[in-house]
Structures are given as structure tokens and as C-alpha cells.
Image 1: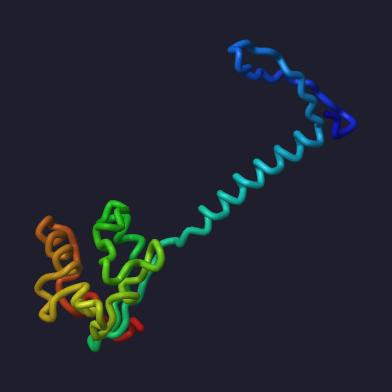
Image 2: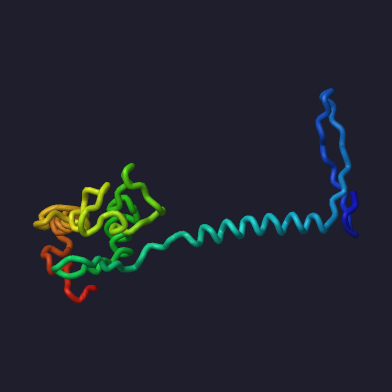
Length: 164
């Protein structure tokens, strides 16, 4: 087979039904080789672009809606310093009645100010109970304080009117 000006023959071994082997000579032009190489490079390049477009974690998130003021949450620092970069430390798996629409979603995508069916947990309750005595944020802050680390302990340490 001759497809271009330059050809190269390579032996290809084919198994025969009689269990004997013979060498078949196949001619592959350099232009076909270049075409196949470009196709492979393009395929792997496209895969890298898809992986690079995965959502990045935010540096800082401002949680709004509380009458006490918004909470400026250093998401990246918390993930790195307190959760050992394990998302599931804070983010629970989706529930069958409300499956995830994307790999990473905001808490407020499911937990709204007033819990809307099928959700049972409103935004505030996703972070702490009404008296701020227990819950995701409060429990972690109390554990840090018990270990002698500095962590917010009062409502106003996190909730600030200027955080909008």
C-alpha cells in the first residue's frame, strides 16, 4: 500500500488457523504516520483541557442571609488547614431525594433560608443549631479551642454586618 511519497515497510505477524505464523509486509506512508500521531496528540490534549476545566475551590466565600450579618469564610484555608483537603469533612454526600447536579455545589444550592421540600435542613441549621451550641462550624471551632488553638467562639466573631 503506497499513500505518500515516503514509505516504510514493517513486518506484521498474523496468526494462521493452522497455528503457523507468517510475516506480512505492510507499507505505511509517513503522511499516515504523521496523521495518526497528530490524532493521538489531539486526543490526549483534549483530555487535559477537560481535566483543567474542573471547578476550582474558591479562596473565600461570603455566606449571606443571616440577620446577624454575613460570614466571610476562608474556604481554601479551612480545606487546607482544618480538613486535610478532604471535602467530605464538611460536605456530606448528596441524598437520594436531592442528587447533586455537579461534582461540587454550594451549600445554598440545597440548603435554603427556609427548607424547601425535599430538603429538611435550612441554611442556618446546615452550619449550626439556632442557639449556636452545636453544628458543623461550632463543633469544629470548639474542638480547636479545646486543643488550645484560636477559633471564633462568639456569633460576632464570624457574623459581621459588613460581609455582604
